[in-house]
Length: 446
Image (cartoon, rainbow, N blue to C red; front, side, top):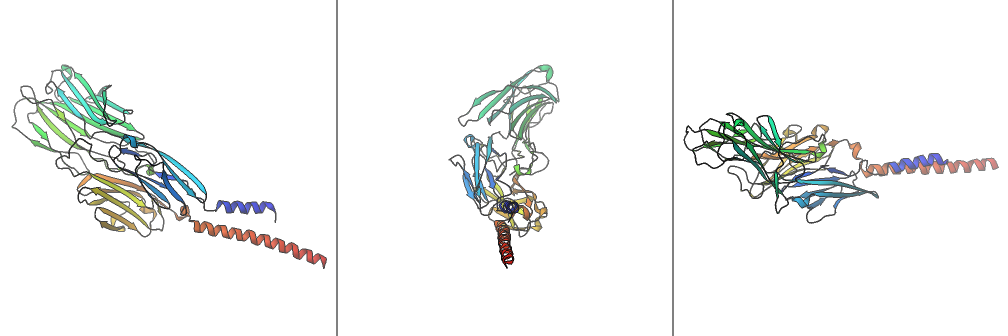
């Protein structure tokens, strides 16, 4: 048999030897986790007979759950030491693969503290504003900006104090001239933290007002939707001037344009607290306004910051997780998506978003978990899945799921069958060629 056809057939056999079409895939590709929160890193390899494992485990890394085609790294109670490079290794038919991701940790309080001194703002009177944020990380990518109405006053070089937990407390002072303090004028402090491809923002503002009502903020748990204001009025109206102070906590996310990078997200919700402070002639202390949580993206479920007790009317801290088995669906094969809540007491989870109607899934609810099952996954089942706590819809997690065609995940059985068929063709060709040469030589001798 000629060598060229033989080499061609051997090349075809090598190309169909069952090696994975895609190498290791880690989701999310650029993981970001909140300080004290949890995250899941999913490493997968499209090889049914392969092995996948997170390596380099230490006390700061977390726990690992491994399956034949994927390995999940569970990180809980993240601290500064948790961040860094995480390595996943895999093997498939003698081939070795390795993939590394850089896990980043951030910390940002739910609210800023904005204080007015020496007394409440009065039109035409000079004052001093103090904006502070506690337990912030990292320092790089942190910007504090003051606004007078919509006009940027300055990007302040704030004072920084490092804590024992490797976090930072920041403080910025803004002196205000009397001519800048007019009725209806708003002063705003804005803190922006950029980490990786994500951007988080916190704002607090104070507005000079001539209203005459004194109010105290009341914490409230609000569902996804428009901002709400909750306040309990104390005291009786007076004729003294007052200052309206508001603190708005926003967490904004810059989209990554990559569906695989968003492992868990939370819908944007704004909670607003309003405080009315009396003007001069009263004994009230300087204003300190605080808002409530408004997360829009989180890797896992960040709990409340340490050092602050649970707010009145809010749900207890819970850890909410979502994942799918297998990590990517395959058209025509079974698939399940699970949402699980870990809370101090009983909790109920609710599916807020699914690509198709919830009735098209078989839902199984056990304790604090809910599982959506599909006997046959189809392309219309891929997309955005989101589940929330029924008692606190402001806390939720999301998953971006893909459903691939069966051709993208050809199993070793098909590959082995193809290999055997090609080897059979080669052996048949060689035997036929030898028999033909033998019969031809015998014919010439006769």
